[in-house]
Length: 245
Ligand SMILES: Cc1cc2nc3c(=O)[nH]c(=O)nc-3n(C[C@H](O)[C@H](O)[C@H](O)COP(=O)(O)OP(=O)(O)OC[C@H]3O[C@@H](n4cnc5c(N)ncnc54)[C@H](O)[C@@H]3O)c2cc1C
Image (tube, rainbow, N blue to C red):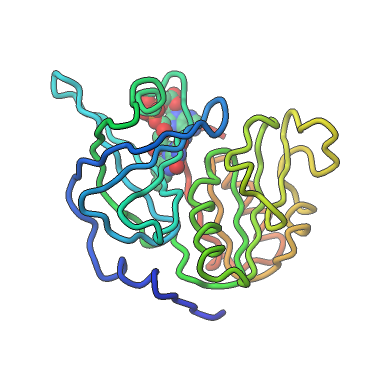
């Protein structure tokens, strides 16, 4: 496999993630009924590798703190800012704060970028397999490839529950294959149900590097399918977002 490192990808490998920074929310986009994207301007921005994440820290007036990780959705070409796409969990501590409290112009404490394993450094071909909000770091990879190496072979396999839950729907084209586990859009003739060997085969990339992201259960199932499809285990990189299956 070629190690294809393009110009914008190199600097981050040489720097350590910084200290906590105060970022400013410059825009908020409602992606789906449960998901919003927050564009955050950073005073000391550092280029990231697609796949990396930031930590976010909230501090209550009594000093209580909650910290969570959120993948970067944007390409490192977007200098000075990052985008985080956050799924609202009703009984959560941090994600409802982003959804219900934060408005444009607010400040938020962040630190990053982190992770050296779940990152794309230009290898090819690439299969991206995402479940629900697990598509976020995969979209950073897809966006970066579109802007720097549009001819590089990359496909996204994306599993969502319902038609209304498709994040980044206006950006998904021929390079994405979707499946709906519950309610597909009206007239949908594509795949339904959980990802399976047929869907992996439909993506048409049977070797190369694979990035799998989603809930624990999704990542387990998808990785198993990739192994059965003949993927080298050393070429399957996984990121798990939460405790549920
Ligand atoms: C490296 C990394 C990157 C991540 N990137 C993203 C991202 O891009 N977008 C995003 O929305 N989330 C992402 N997450 C998940 C995120 O860090 C939080 O776990 C999530 O937002 C829940 O935090 P909370 O404070 O709202 O809920 P919590 O108060 O932590 O949890 C509330 C309830 O939800 C359950 N729960 C916690 N996390 C999840 C989950 N992910 N799915 C289902 N149930 C859960 C808990 O068990 C608990 O019952 C990422 C996690 C990791 C480790």
